[in-house]
Amino acid sequence: MALYAAAHYAWAVPEQQHAARLARRMGELSMEHRRGTGRSELTRSAAPGRVGGLADFTRWLRLIDRLQDAIEQANLRYRASNVALLALVLAAGGYLLAGLFQVPLALLRLLAGVIAGALPILYILWKSKRRLRAFEAALPDAIDLFGRAMRAGHNIHGGLEVIASETYDPVRMEFRKVMDEVALGSQVDLALRNLARRMPLVDLHFFVTGVILQRQTGANIVGVLESLSGVIRERLTMAARLKAHTAQQRLSAVVMILAPLVTGLAFYVIKPDHVRVLWTDPTGALFFTYAICSEIVGALVLWRIASVRF
Image (tube, rainbow, N blue to C red; front, side, top):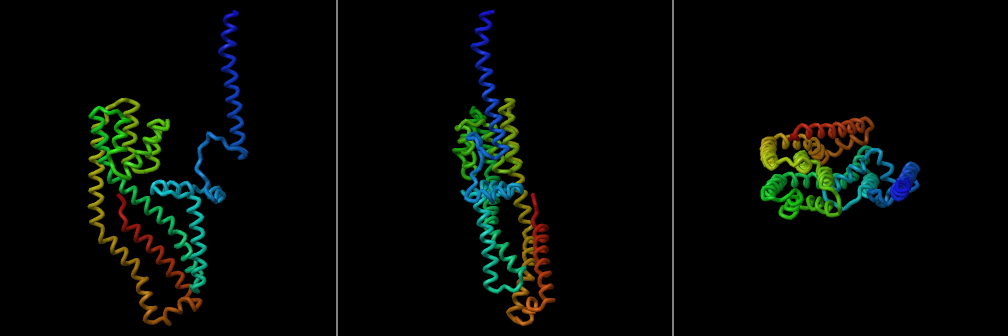
């Protein structure tokens, strides 16, 4: 009995005290999180930037988070909240500048502000889409290199290191991030899932899923990865052919979008008095507003039809 009591005192009591301290600390963190008065050093969150209030205001729409994901995909060193502030400043500046140049209709001034504000976001989306395409084009070679490394006797960690060192950007950069996360103590599965989150490509998701299954089950997936790289190459080839065959349709859409603008500009140069009625007369202003809205909607519909998704 005495031996049992000593063992209980030496082992069970410290464990109970440690569990009680841990439960108390977790309760304090939960209370701080609900009240919003504290912040744990162990919680990881994105830096709010210079306008944290704007990020809090728009977080319910997830606009800041989506913009930050696009910035990471484009490999830019911006903060989403700062980009949103810049977009608002440019929008206000475009609206005021259109007013200084005495743009006749309020709709045109508002349109100028929207276009000016959308420029930084459109630039980020363009860079992101371009980098995703470059990553997708280089992914089959990276998968083949990984498969050859596995056949040579490397493990999964060694195969990922080969991709991170022997390929070229943007594949090399993204897999270097994976290896850096693993070197800092992260699990390989989690690092690969973070890679799939940063680069939202279906083929990359297949690769990540196959590597995780190989790591968890020990199955031989080298043949599956080789088939995957072949399927990706065939799909990219088919996409290039489809893009070539639909070039005429896209050109027709561009011509139809620009035709009203060029025609209106030509009439304004030849007969400015006939065109000026569209914003000097109240009835003409209504028709002009309707024409602008119809042009925007028609351009979006035509470009949607001409842009073939694959």
